[in-house]
Length: 291
Length: 327
Image 1 (cartoon, rainbow over the protein chains, first blue to last red):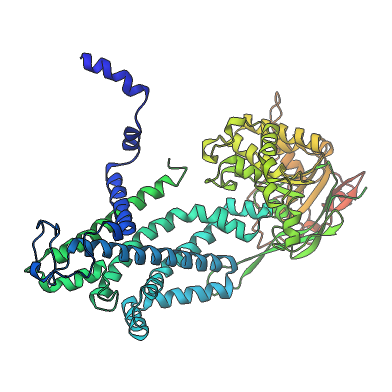
Image 2: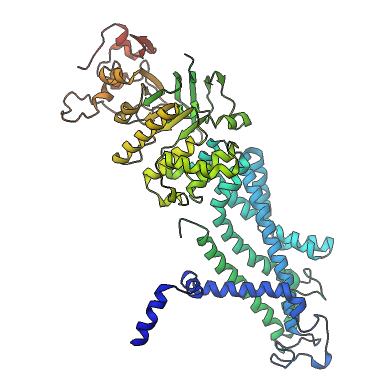
């Protein structure tokens, strides 16, 4: 009782920063944000924090189980440290996923806005391209491009950047057209604003929440797509490593050394889940009418 | 006196698609309207829903293209919509919308929206925008601490003040108000109308006030044009039109305005709906509902004729000097 009286005024007087964050941000979102920042930190600092170079082999410690001193996540079939390789993979996969998501969002949204702005032939062209993209299995497109040009990280980012752009284009076009019919865009036109101002300053922020949701959907898909391509041997090439690449090569040892494959698979799963959770939360935060 | 805004024989046609195979119908939403507004004057435009008054307002501002006729602003023809000249002209003419919530961007604080025309037209140095916005907010009666609010956090009347402040930011010469108070409740209506009158007195701007509410129009307009099915059927000074309406349609409208302390005994109740604009009645468009229709009304279209001093009406009965009056 005395405790309660003593502590109560302190709590009501000034909630600490941590407490304020905890009451405003759901617990799961905090977890996912923490996980994402950990991933980004790892990606940035991997050169300094990873215990071994990714290609360093130690044939005397092949297939060491996780928990082995010096190899906390074990080693693979060539005695390479799984933790070190995992860190490098996170960097490569995140670069591809972030780069590609940003590319496809910008590309798709721009085309969608152009279609909405000019209508007519431009709109038909964009929609035909979008239909074409949607009808073509992306994996086949990616395989043929990679088979032709060989695989490099830049090419991979650009190729993945074409994944999902048609969704942004369709969404952006539809939303921009309906926004144009609504009052606020018409009102700004009437104020004498240039189309660039109308689209970038008014329509884009208003439709951003939908595009962000779409981005949170595309991001995991790109990670999975890259994993798939690497798994097929056309994505990131050894000795470079990525999450999908690790899963692909770890497959053969699934029964004897499942950790080689489970560690990157778990990272893929947790990262995509975190992106979805954080994206959902971010969408609500960015909308002043929901706050 | 040269008029600030002059419109001659304006026509605006909408194409209405009826079904997949049917021929499209053409609706003449505005059909041969001529009018003039001088600086500092308020022209009220009244009429039923669908009479084409909002379309007329948009054509006057050059937001909708006219299919025929032309609009002169300060003696110069209206540039085509979307051209740089057209955009530049927006600083001189502004529109106040019916639904203020729809006309405002819900993601921007109101101060930013009020200052937007200033930035678009580069009228005020970036550093001074904030001061000018506070000035405008004070002029329309918004508190300074509301500057960072979002539109949905304000009441309907406050939102309409924001729209008016934004419209006045560039100090336009012409303000077209499209039903600015019909979405507001009565006590707020009076505030907004008084605000518009004050601002007009202070800045001497010309105003086109579109409304279906005769009480409000009577309160604010110097001259009133009555529209029926895309045409002006009567135009006169505000005083004349409410005291002595000449056209039977105007008479019906005026008789429907309640006067405090008097029973509505001589109210003329119009029969039926306004006709479909795609199927205009022959002759005088009003004849199917007109209580005084004569056989010639079915066949010949009455022209808007100038009568007495500075007033005009379009009715065949008036031509025969059988002026039907409501006493």
